[in-house]
Image (cartoon, rainbow, N blue to C red; front, side):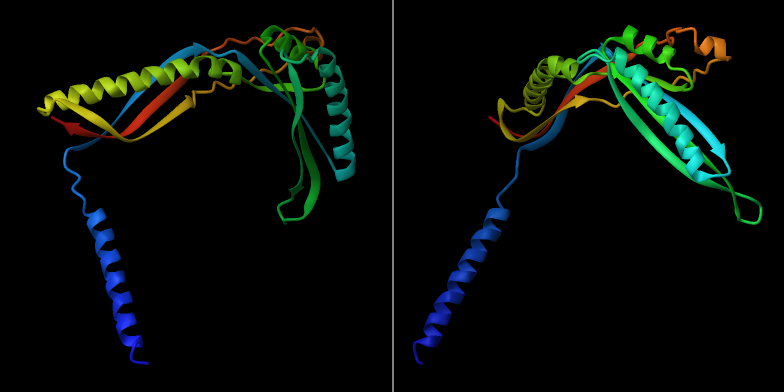
Length: 238
């Protein structure tokens, strides 16, 4: 029993020593640390065209409205798949919604539904022509973006440029603060596409003859931005 207190005292002393070391580590001087960031960006013509088409129906019976939507969507999907080609154009269904309409007393007096079909691909002429052939559906939006392949092609060079700018900036800042150089601290690198400014285009057939005329949907690509940012700290040295 007499040994208990010296052992506890030794353990307490060890804990205090460890705690003191941790505090000392946290209190390590952070003089000459400089935090900043550098970025690089590249504008490229967007190569991926996406077109969304939609059909709406309404009626007093929910099941009937749903069946009408499905009929139009299935027919358009079958037609679009004839033009689909791996790497050139992909076809997928979009949203499918059915919701009630209410009268002024809050009672359900009908149903309205909407179904979407999405065409997307790098063969922009194929995508636009296919969209123009789909009867029974209206084009609701047209938008361009950067494909993953195009992004990957340029991302490495943009990242290398951002790193070069970061190092050049570090050397210049060291000189301006009167130091001879620097050593790298903790640094992070982020790269990828920047969110662009999508330009949705509303395009509706004026009549049934136009809808069946296989007229390609008018499109014009914009530019997307691939960017890289390097941020972190350096320690200025003499």
